[in-house]
View 1 (spheres, helix red, strand yellow):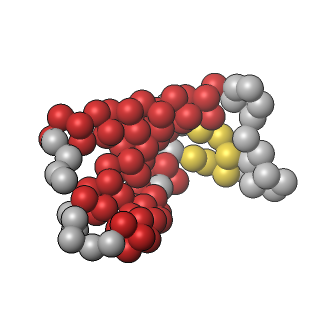
View 2 (tube, one colour):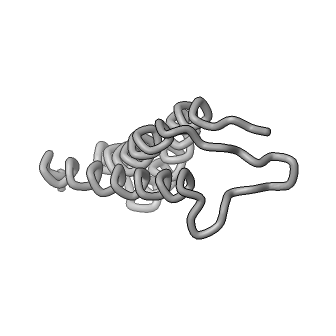
Length: 103
């Protein structure tokens, strides 16, 4: 079973929307500001598009990796999607780090 390009685009759009909303809430410091002891980041405006990109990549790449190998068992595809998701999240987090300043 293959996923259509339209469905994959919807996954990316919704992932990007979620990442952008999350980044905007961090930027707006709503409902509470993000703080972790001495690490208290301040967010620049470009955190919002970086967050949208992060969410989109994080949503699309694991789905693509899972459906690339339909002949594999479901458990193997899920494990592969988790590994790809972790790597994609780590790589796509780098633009977010450029949008944060630590005190």
